[in-house]
Image 1 (cartoon, rainbow over the protein chains, first blue to last red):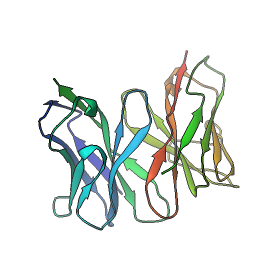
Image 2: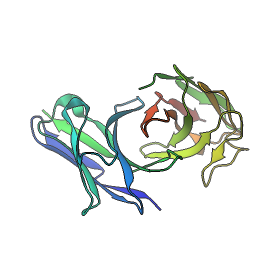
Image 3: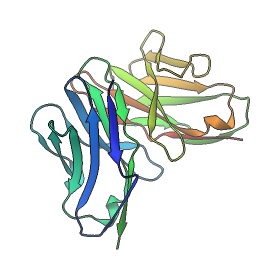
Image 4: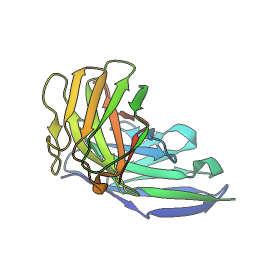
Length: 114
Length: 114
């Protein structure tokens, strides 16, 4: 069965500092991997996705993630945090089949200090 | 991407009543899903809404409690039946197309049951 683990329910960084949000996955087959962001009182917005092409994936708002098969990880990074990055971030995994079902991690709330 | 709207955006309901949530997409999509996000938690898939046939429910969710309709490729409804305070959650619909595994989310319906 597939699963996603996000380490750290809360991450706090200073504005301008590096953002690192951790995600580890478990999948018996090659997965699709996603990062979504949820701003307060809003739905989810797709930040980026990995679909077995390049292992370094660039997304919107300056975020990127690197797929590391040996570590079963797909950590999200941003070189310099902005106050507007404060939100909840979810990592998700999908099977490479026709079901399209997503399994979400527990989420990480990013706090950005001025 | 896809533009998804949900109605209502929020509601406060009495226990024992039912609420129907609508999801409208701006273009035809293959897959539509319904998720529940309990307060402070991650997303859990309720069911896949199948066009012209019965929805496919995930473990722990049943049709009598969460009847779903999908009359065409751009519209679906989720009903939360015989509500209890434990049903207080955000309910989100999402869509996916054939050509990729990305899911796009609606803004959600915030339900409070008193």
